[in-house]
Structure formats: structure tokens, C-alpha cells
Length: 374
Image (cartoon, rainbow, N blue to C red; front, side):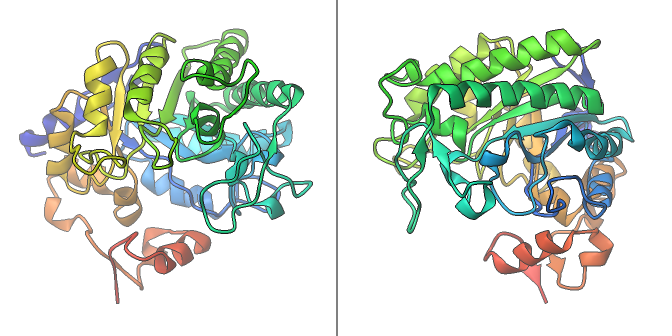
């Protein structure tokens, strides 16, 4: 290995006591490739196996905790005990080469397609549609439904423990249900689940408490609990960076194992103010990095990109598209094979890269998502 990159391969100990073999993380990336009933498919297992070999922590794609929160087709599920067998296979695959396996827990809220939910209805904090063309109006969740959903996150955590995962990541980012409760755009409630910026934290904080209680009851060994969130949203009113700094401080005081800041680019500034170029990841790190480990992510394509990001002080660096395009990215850096790291994908590479059909179709459909060449 080129010793220039040695810091990327230093181990890291999380607050719970579990240790990552290096500072590199497989980011949660949607693949649309699970079975129609929500079980883990045989197509996605080799895809994960190839990409989890080198990283210290491997985070799964978002897994739905309840059927009324299915976010997209081909999503896998942890909504009942029938899912445990397939999830056990996935956990074993992710841990096969010494990586920590983390299951990302998710509810789509108003972003769930109505035709994907059991009754054709979608739910959110308030009956306010997303600001997207043709977005349906969700039903406002009742108190009973909110409590049921909080319990669903707890039950999902118990199943993750039984399946052999090393931790869970709570998906509070990317406009999904937990973000909808925190956002002044989608949460106009006047009960205990809404109000000012502090009151809008109530739902995600209740989920954290439920998960921590579940871990204390069912896990016989240290178990990671992480939280992923988006630092801003573009809607008006919407989540501001000042809101997120307050939220990050509250999350840091919950004794979590990490915060995962969801951004398209590690160095990107504000999406609300084009004149504010301050990295949102570094803003969060500067605020709470002394209290809780921070995972940074976003357009970290090269080893030098990863090194520069890690040198800011954040604890770990997540790789998403990079590990889809080059599954051996970590190993090639470690073995000083930098010139062989794949930077583009040929339309003939699907078989070699072990990319499931649905993911491959999306890669070829969404403009500029991947550097596709003929």
C-alpha cells in the first residue's frame, strides 16, 4: 500500500465498543432488486458480497419497517419475522470479510407510491403533499398510527439483532417519513408531535428511544445505532441548516454511535442559499464532532478525495456509486493498484460487476448518475 493512504485503513472504535477495521463505509444505495414479497433475493446477495469485502462498515439499502411505508419497487422488508431468514443470509454476506453489517431502517411516508402500499394510501405528519408534480395528498397519521410506527422500528431492530446484524441505521434523510416530521413544510401538527423546531424532533427521538430499549432487551453484545439525516431541504418553509445544527446537537446527546450526513457532495454548501459555500458535512462536524462520530459522504470518487475528506477530522468516509462502479475500490487502494480503479462503466460490464437487472436498468436510464460509456 502507498503509505500516503494509511489513515484510510486505521481502525475506528465506536462508542458502543464495536471496532471498524478501517475508515471506509459502504453507503446505503437503493438497488430495486429484492423479491416482490420483500424478502432478500438471490440476485442481490452476490452484489453485496462483492462490495462489502474491503470496507470497515457495510450499510444495507433502506429496508421498510412497515408495509405502509414501502418507498419504491424492489425494496426489501423487515416488517415481520418471515424476513429474518433472508436477512440472516445478507448479514452473513456483509460480515464475511470482517466488515460490520448495518441494516438501514426506513419508512417512506408521503414519498411512498400509493400503488405500493396495502390499501393504496400514503401517510405523513400532516396532509400536505410533496412539492413534486402529481404528488398525492397523504393522510395525516393518527396518534395510534404514530405509536404503531415507532413500535415497528423497535420490532425491526429486534429482527436485525436476531438476523446477526451488528447495528441499525435510522433513515431520517432524503425527504422520507422521519424528515417529514422534522420539517416545517410537511409537519403542521398542533399536538405533541408538531410545533416549533424542538417539538418537531419528537417523532425521530421517540424512535431512537424505542430502538435503544430494544437493543438493551435483546442484544447480548455491543450493537451500533446510527442516524442519517439531510442537513437542509429546499422547500419554503423547510428545514434550514440552523434547524439541523440544533437537531444534530440533540442527536449527539442521545449517545448514538454515529451521525451520517446525507449529501450529494461532501464539500457542497447550502441548497437554500447559493452564496453559502460552507460544507454542510463540515458544519455538522464542527458543531458536534467532538461528541459523536460523523460519517461523511458524497462524490468521493478517488483515494485522494477520500483522504482529503478524512483529514477534515470526520471519523469515517462512505462510498456509494464508487463501490457500484468499482467493487474492489478499497482493495485496490490497499494493494497500490490505483491505476486499475474503474472510473467509467461500459454497457458490457453488468455481468462482471454483478449488478442486478433492476439497478442496471436505472443506471442506464437516469442521466449523469453514473459515468456510462458505450
